[in-house]
Amino acid sequence: MVSRSFVYSKSKISNNKYYLFSVGVTSNYGLYYSEIDMSLNNGLGAVTQKNIQLYSQVGNDCLTAIKHGNGRDWWLIFRSALFPNDTNDNFYLYLIDSNGINPPIIEHAGSFNYGSEAGIKFNSTGNQFARLMWYGVIELFDFDRCTGSIQFNKLIEYQPVDSSPYNYYFFSAFSPSGRFLYITEWDKKTYLHQYDLQAANVTMSKVTVDSFSFPKYTGGGLKLAPDGKIYMSSLYTPTGSQYYPYSDTTYNMYNMNLSVINEPDSAGLACNFTKYSYYLGGNRTYVCLPNNPDYDLPGDSGCSNVSIPPAPQRGDQQIHTTYISAWEKLFVNAQNLKGKDAAITIYDAAGKEKFARASPVKSLGLFGIFYT
Figure 1 (cartoon, one colour):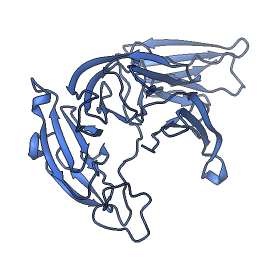
Figure 2: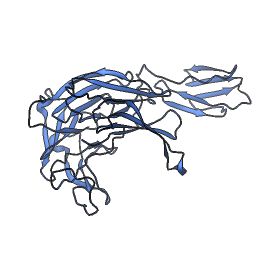
Figure 3: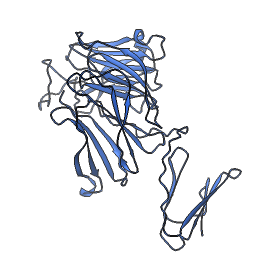
């Protein structure tokens, strides 16, 4: 495959700076990041550092990210794929926090690789993800957002590497509740499958929601949207081969619309799948949908690995806090700051920012702030 996976994540430096991560799956193998400063170029942004390599070997084309359990930091998840005879099960997890991009944690879980084509998709709560390999493997994993621990849950589909024909699995999406997993199969025909993850036998719960033979090889990306529906893209391949980029005249129902799973938490055909039913307003789609993570995923109140940056100390300045439960107020006394510029930020137990202020105030409802 000739493609790249992209994930965006806010950097530690400021709200204007971002990391852009990418996987090289052609000759420029490895994991890379670039830095983008959106305050430059009159607000249009500019790349300040480009293609800095984090990992130099072949990787699966399945880069993803999930918010840390503290509600602020991020886990970037990358899967290595070494050739030949790729017998590794290595997940690389890079913690992105106030210190920047930390050295990776390596987790071992699941089946060995055979090939670099793979996909990872999290459920809506971030505690499970599905991993697909193009040549017929579907696996389910449990994930701890606090520690980054990956635990194998179950094998849903598996084809030995020397068997054929293959089931070409690449894209997936969970229903909003996490009960159903949807898979697109990409072969001469396109198939949309549904698995019930609460079934006694998940493999046998497979329902083929729909299939279509034209255009060929178009089993596209799946994405759960904020409206609770799952959208599916389609690559227009009139000759059965890759058709990129489209010519200026190639506009049709297949590439100008997305297909929609309207009720993804309903079993089987009741999920109400409608092909080419969402018009893109004159724009066109290829096989993929954006690989952006869920920026609105809340923190986990049970997360014990909360990393809150220490309050900066300046000379003999001190900060004292007292919480009075009967009043539901937190009193913060910052000594020796009178007449000086100061900023204070308060986080809750999950590491989520609750208050930030650069000047003294008398009352904040649940918080009381006093300076001396």
